[in-house]
Image (cartoon, one colour):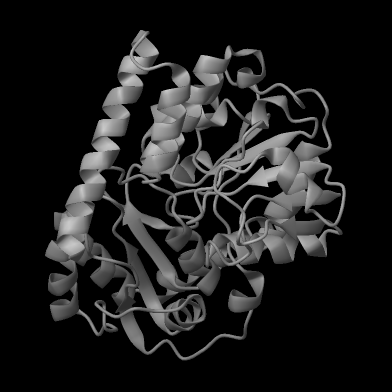
Length: 362
């Protein structure tokens, strides 16, 4: 299968390289757009520069806000990926209407997209790089480990609890920054790793929970969790806490009961490395794409032009590409409809955010 990816391979340091390697391992050929391509370049122009005829076009969630003109008329089936599906879901549904297939990384959102009118959404959860985790057992010198950001308004719980945990247990530098390889090494040298998710989406089955289980450390995460909707069982593959008051006692219990800790950790590791590597996800993805029942069924293929342009405006406004959003607004004809009024609001918000960021950086 030939796949054109609408970004560069390094535009998402975690996801893209791992998927590219896994897809190539499944026999797929990948091509990426030229770095000088305009963010709103016509799709036909991008295809003319592609060294092969693609069977599918992928739009990955990345730091390159490229959204080619003409997606709704594409002769080649298209697919987009939504990693943080729970954030700005209504807007993501609108953008996804430009694509025939939608990979959502969180269970239940395939139904939400379907109820909103998209027939092509399916669940493709996070995964791990087997090469980083399928290694011999190491000395687990840390009682507890953490790797992840603490910055931003959605991580207040992390900033509150990580210093408390560091005072109780032998722990790594939780304020440090780690590469993917360093994270894998850290977790494989730790007995327990705690997952403190976003304050606004605590049930998140994020990349961390898969990495922890793949490492052979015991994962302790909050309940409820999406993991139980993805085939994992509490008490068998991971441990959950119901409130923060129970977090330290839970960690202490499993540190004091090594047999229980290692049994659950080993079960989580075996399942994750068997079912949740990028090689597994690539095989699942190619199987989905080989079905022709929803190919070429992007909702926007049947939309009027003004509605399609509003989807582009919304995407560019969300990505901070204000000039491109403004160009779409002008082509929509100003303030002649409810959609145009909403577009004006989105454009104004994006412009205001850009001005504030400019003042802060200056």
